[in-house]
Length: 370
Image 1 (tube, rainbow, N blue to C red):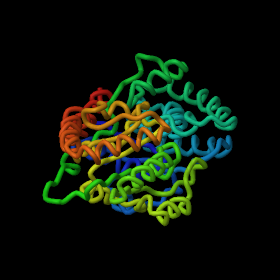
Image 2 (cartoon, rainbow, N blue to C red; image 1 turned 135 degrees about the vertical axis):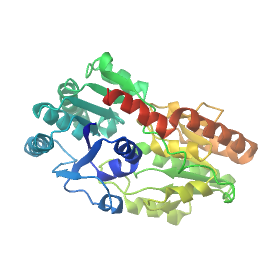
Image 3 (cartoon, helix red, strand yellow; image 1 turned 60 degrees about the vertical axis):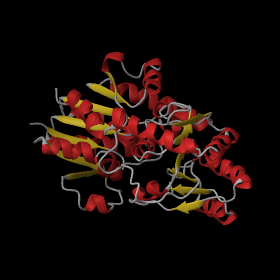
């Protein structure tokens, strides 16, 4: 049996998105613990987390060499003390510093998950371009120390290979984080709200929230009864919308805002259509949950998003930053209601065939437990 530590920059990433993987490993007899930043808010899921939790300091923003060296040193001490057989990393900074720390501590199995490129890779400002160059160097050093590197889509894998940040033989493609088909499933006893659209995402501009709001305005001018819901938490990322901006949209009557909640299921049950006009993703967990709920999905023809939808079958693919096309696809679903049930059935089939969390977790374990 193996001793395994999962590392991420936020506890919620592990207690929510990796919960099934952690439990599957634990039930199989492996010793599992997690390492997360000391500054974490320790949400309710973390307070009741049944596995050991190790903490370290992490500056999520910026590139302070002193703070990052502190992170590296603290992770090294954790790995030296705990002597894990496997370290499994998520998100940018843990992938970089945990990989190096695990190598320094003599960990035999080092694995990282590229769950998306982040706003640094999608940003165009001079500052972001400079930071991207630094991160590329760090990634190249860290990923060279990994046994394998998991990617959630082929576009991200190709970009990392083109940039020579890792080697082809180290890369493994997986179908996102998977979705629990036991938890997320249609419930036909609950009535849908007619012509209702739902977007679940942090309030980041590159999630396409601005385009969603613009499209909602266009659609409501023709169908004022249509409902547009935005569910998500605020973010200290500089590329985020403020809560005041979101409240202004709500006062305008364009959208209904739902603060971050652990109960996304009830909102998915009432929605007719799921929308994510993101600029780029790894594989969006919110879309996987919508597929499992049997919802038609409108998302962008962008890396990480395009894998989840076959245009015209289980939803629509729209160009990035094109609110007019987005609004037209919304109108198509309102004015051709028979499409919703047909596309919803295709979504559910796709979730079962490709994104079942049991299958996804098995593909990860087949690699790390060799």
